[in-house]
Amino acid sequence: MNNAVDTALIFAFLSFFHLWGGAAFGAGVRARRWLPVAWGLLVGATPFYFGIERVRVLGAWGGLIWQAGCSAAAALAVGLWMPRLRAQFLKDGTSALMAGTFIMAAGAALGALFFRSGSEALSVIVGGIAFMFGAMWFGSGLRQFRGR
Image 1: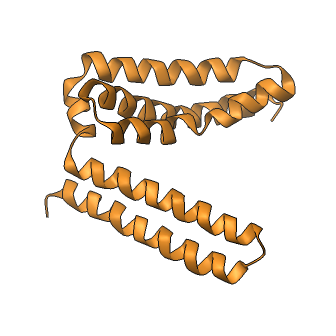
Image 2: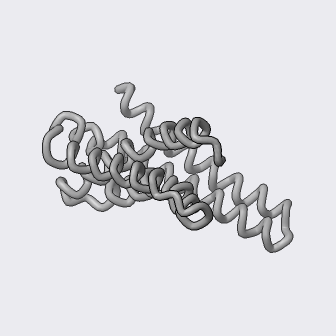
């Protein structure tokens, strides 16, 4: 990922997650609710790995500064000036989406843990069941958004 165009495209794609996570973080801080804050950190801060890795390996700070700027701008904008968007992050359907995301992430981590310990079958069964349960929870949040 040393080509400037490739790097710009990757960080442009990751900006979506930083904006989304930063917006949830700002809405959660403003409303004093822990779930949007935690979810915003999960979605918005996880891609920071790429910026941190570029700093560590190449000494290139541009991507990390871009990522931090996107996250901070979204958090401030939603937390301070965008009440309708903030309200979207605080709906019941969004809470179900966020809970489902955490359950899916836990299922994936559990599956990876079992796989790393050498039990591929247990990894697929336990991790898969937890991930599917999280996906169903996520789907219930989508259903709540549709109003059915």
